[in-house]
Length: 315
Length: 315
Image 1 (cartoon, each protein chain N blue to C red):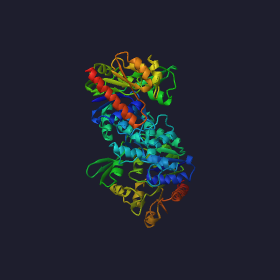
Image 2: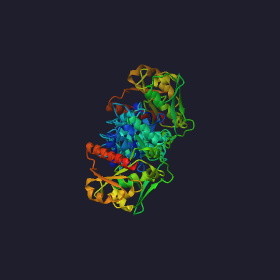
Image 3: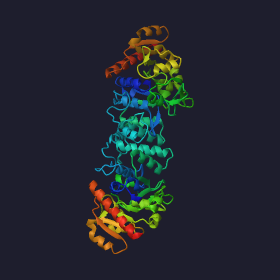
């Protein structure tokens, strides 16, 4: 089993590439749920949805989230009814949230609800929330405001100064069924090019996950979401600096230093890569900017190959 | 104040006509909520919505329910996700249900939630649910099944044999704020051409409403939903027979006999009307089939005129 840890956007792209590279049944995707939000009374799991949509090639390439060819008629009407609309849900997308919310209200766990929706959508890979317990990524600003991730990321467009990042509820949380087991028995573990602080960070904050990564005999390969000192998208760089890590590939290596075997960085970071190679870590260069479907598959193949080579070395 | 008691479909048409005939501020509409249903986890009040949409001239004339120019993309997607879809909610319509459900979850009463939605939609008339308490119109079939109204009406297309009709929760219910007061101080009370059993019936089953109608000094005019022994639409005739009433205009008169002053019937029932005139009741003939906007206004004007004439006689 190839096990991927991921958030939304960038990570979902690599998941899509992997889905075309390994048999779908051999892919297990462990997804951040720290971004989950109650919106219009519905339980929205943005990263899980991005992964599900990516796995059926229905993730909007234009928007990077939501469904291809979606419309926003309900949203426009919500605005007319005076409801908040800074977080967008499409008309087709709404069906996912309505279904999930009903399954949760009926007493199902988030992982059971996700499995049910995945099955209905025709997804053949495993999609696992990091935890069935509620964990909320909270952003404390220098002005003392406490924002949930969507308020920070979407409403404020991450243009507020961050004092601290907390994963509320993480300490008491348990990994969802299959999370630790999949990491333990994996052929390879891949950390997708997602934000190390707010996408992969919450997964690592679930008690037992980091330990499972340290313990597994599987090679662990991360794809850097940082190119040339900046995030491909989103606030990864600024949040990494807030954590005291450099906002470079060295910072990515630092975030995962206790378990990482291979770091795949962009060709643009070739010079820095040479420097990082001085340690134990293997650093490989590839094109990590996934603009086309071919780019996604190419990077997926490269990452898998790197993992399987490292497996040889590690065993 | 002109006070109307109504269900959806036919009643909403007359409400639309009245809205163009009297100043909207002088119109109070008391609406059946026995049809309310929890659908996809949302609180749907079909009759309230029909009235709200009618009051802003947005009720679909083609369908007779829901919003004009709505689409059903979310519904189609719900079907793909294996969710029940025999009850249709449009993409625009969904916004109403999401908003109502959120207001109710936030602790608002149904009447407060309705007032808030009405205000946002630009409705200037009062729209009052018959009660803030949950009352469910339940249909017991001869096979012993207990169906809620939507299961009976929409899912089974009212093609099952009915043994009994119950208004679950009615005995413990209270009229919503304004219901009894509006009836008491009305200039005229109009019973719209809605099903006497399952649209007007639930309103009359709320303790205090029937008494208020008996006591009010306002003239009470009903428009018959029965023409030539058959309902204009829906299962009114068969349900009236089940109650032991004839499925004719005489049956309508019977349903409201303890408070009705004037019954407006269709021109097609002219002969029967002559017979009914023998009692205390005034019976007037008009075109009650509302096909066009003009028909709605014409019938509204006729009904109002009849009420005001009866007021002279009653006072």
